[in-house]
Image (cartoon, rainbow, N blue to C red):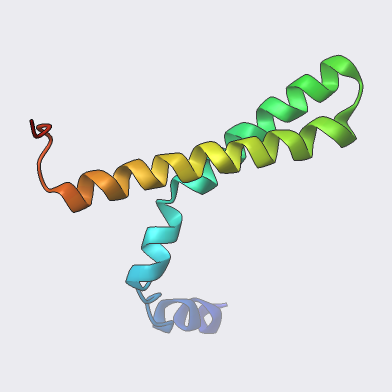
Length: 85
């Protein structure tokens, strides 16, 4: 029993995620897909046609999520929030 405890205590810590993976986890597309899938499932449950509405919701969520990502990227590239005249 104590041997197992020692093994668990001696395991090395998990390494941090690389920078690319952190960006993926913070992606707007992932959030959009989740929301779209939930909306599609809800519409599909009401219309009794889950097979149609779940993929439609996921695709629409993906489009919305990509627009979120592009807005973030545009703000990051501009460097300022004030519009130029």
